[in-house]
Length: 559
Image (cartoon, rainbow, N blue to C red):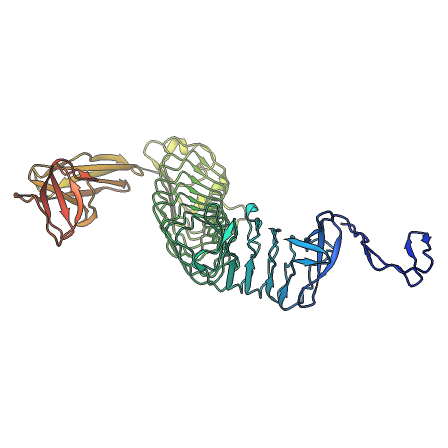
């Protein structure tokens, strides 16, 4: 931006010069005259006597902003000297101009400032206004503020790692710091947009905003209330959290926990639908349990999570992005369930310790380098009954730095398909191709005859998801499902994924013969069932079987 001359002074002879023209005023002396235009840069003074730059927003209205510039632009002029330390107090008015805005990068990189006191009257804040103010401890947002640049999705205090006191002055129409939470909350949508090491997230927050805690290097733990459903991009990027409970979160955005180098324990809940791109990049997560509600795993979501040893992709997952699990050195086995139809580019690239890869029957596309670099690969099991050609680089590394999997691994294919595989690009290169039976026998039984009946059982394709239901005979109630003498569910309906031959037992218990019209005051109701053992959300008119908290079951009549 070209600099403009905005102050012209009479010289000691009483002349004002402009170009080559001199005008004489007969030795009259004129005081300083300010002739500014919109966009001109002026000098103001803080209450401590520090200079700061301000830019005219409207000469007609006499308004200015604290000068903002992009530090990457050569020759930029900072708003204040970057070496100023301690506190700086910005006046509401300077040199006759009301200060109503903080410009882009205005205080960026002022690493020694501990507090910037802002006047009432400031309305807007520019991009990265306070970014990398590493010593900044306190900030108070005026009640007049209407835009903290959060509409663009960025935390203007990103990287202010010393922040401990955050307050929005009462009466602000758009933002608050409710309940003394030490955070900035956008009222519209209940979004927490700026947090710090002392933040306590209020119980009514719905979202954590983009970069809200990014760079808070002293933040070791944080509790998310059940109301928080969405974590936006980079919300906790680079924060040294060791664990996080996401039991109620529905959506995890771009890079939310990327580079959280101490994050070993993550708990997901059954509301989770989306894990975004780079969400957990380089996190040392030790155990990964993905919920059955999950639909999307984004590109590079778990890239370089080297501590993950096992991976169970739920049947609910519809999309796995490119490089989602690349460089996960701890993985020893990869299982792609039947619900997945696409394996993206480099999805499991250079997972060096993978020994076995299982590919579900509905996969119809496998991207380049999807499994390349698995130097310990011994088995590839494909359930695809109608194989298609793939690139040879799906399994083989371009660089020749790991053993050739076509020579070291065995390809297992469904019975009757060996000839097809042996003729197709990307598969025929395997020196050993063997067939197997891709089915399993599911046996469903009861402890004794005449107690009840089950709705399912038989031969199923491995990878299929099946649901079985139990129905009790008169005088019996359903207690649960058992596999190898271990109860796996107490619900009348039970769903499992077929992986091998198993026997599952439906357990029934004799119902009490007496009809009771009251229930124990000590025990509480845990569930209602119809006479035939079907679970009900509420009691129905007539006789119901009621399961109590003390483990007993009884018949109760409801009128």
